[in-house]
Length: 399
Image (cartoon, rainbow, N blue to C red):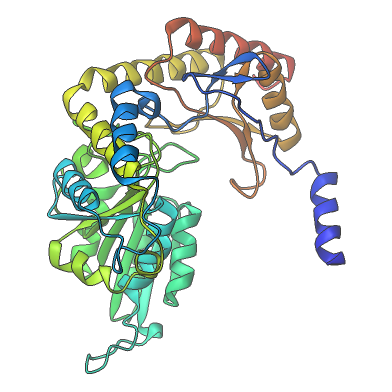
């Protein structure tokens, strides 16, 4: 216990504990904290759907019909019609055979990756030993992917970020019998895209499976918001696509898409599906309403990207380094941790919530303010943010 207390004290002395803001109300794209309004520049609620009237009404009707939870695993007594409806809706939206829904995106990764890579000693089935399995992932993959890989007990190798030469060198050298290449579609800290076509080309050449995490792509990337596969024109070529329902969709939950037969197999192999309750039923109702809006109201996505491009352009013109962002995630690179913490606090004092992200979320010396916009941000919101960033950046000698 003393060790843990000493560790906590060390964290506090280094100012590593994040400034956690307690929010009283959420009239997106603003938050209310102690009766003061703040512009939110850090939410993943990209399309503002969490508070959309149609989504809220659908969720309320779900509560009236189903209550607030199933209290049971889906394979015991918790498999409601609404969940199967939701899975069919997601599969149709993602233009794939089938979908499987989990309570969260994190639970999707930590359950699915081990289920794909571990045979669990099935009697009478030819076994592949864990040491003959290899997972190869981008070094900047999300922590839920990393944890899922660790739980799989397979050998793990990382390739340099988006370095396809390094990935191919690992594939060339390995003697593993079963290989899985796994990557984020949109990288959550840098805002760039995985080179999915090249990954698929290498996977085919070296007989490897491919799984992508489409958490930050679902709903906003691609012509219809179907994600990175649509964006690159490779729909149907990725073995496993997972994502979250807690970002652009505005709810909570995770999903996996793939072939019907493979997903049926995973329903009996994935611990986070078998031994946990599913997504709450009212959430399922709200999610289906949100997906309907994404399909029928493309102007919402258009406004969102107008805001993204407005903020990006303004920050770049002001002299900030927004790295190689290709998407809605806009990292304002500061570098020095102390300066980044101070910048986030000064932004908050000026009515903007945009936290500092530092180690261990990003490498030491790469601290940043990670900005995102929402479709319902107004032009004055964005202009005020750019002006405030500029003033604080000058004050702290960042630009």
